[in-house]
Length: 152
Image (cartoon, rainbow, N blue to C red; front, side, top):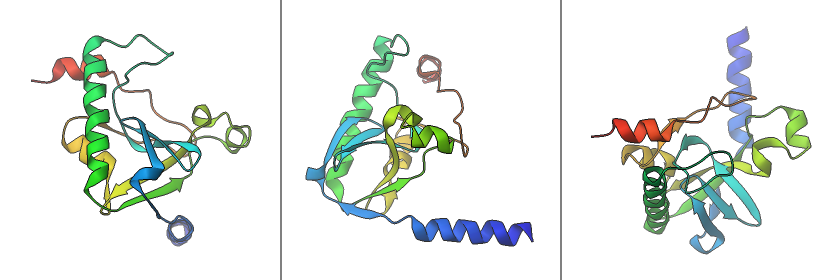
C-alpha cells in the first residue's frame, strides 16, 4: 500500500512540475550552478560547481580558476539548443520556504539543453560534482580543494 501511495505522489509531482521553454536572452549566468531568469535567481539542483567567491569561506586560486571554467562552459552550452527551466521545490522546511530563508532566497530549478540536464553535462566534463539534497536539507558542501587536488 505504501508503494502505491509513493508512486501516486511521484506521478502527481511529475505532472505538477512542468518544464518551461526559456530563451537565451532571458538567462544571466551567475556561476556554474546559478542563473538569473525572469526576475528570479535559481540555484540549479543535482550538482555543484566550484565557487568564484563566497562570503562563507576563503576560495583558493585553483578553485576560482575551475569555477571560471565551469561558468564559461555553462554559458557556452546554453547556445547549443532549446532551453527549458523547471522550478522545483528547494530542500528546506515549509517554514524556511515561507520565510524566504531557504537557499539564501533563491528558487531551485533544473535547466535542460535539448532535453539534457546541464548539470549532468558539466559533471561528465569534470567541471561539477553530483550534489543531491534530501527533502528538507542538503549534505555538507563539497570540498573543492580536496577534489581538485585528487585530479590527475
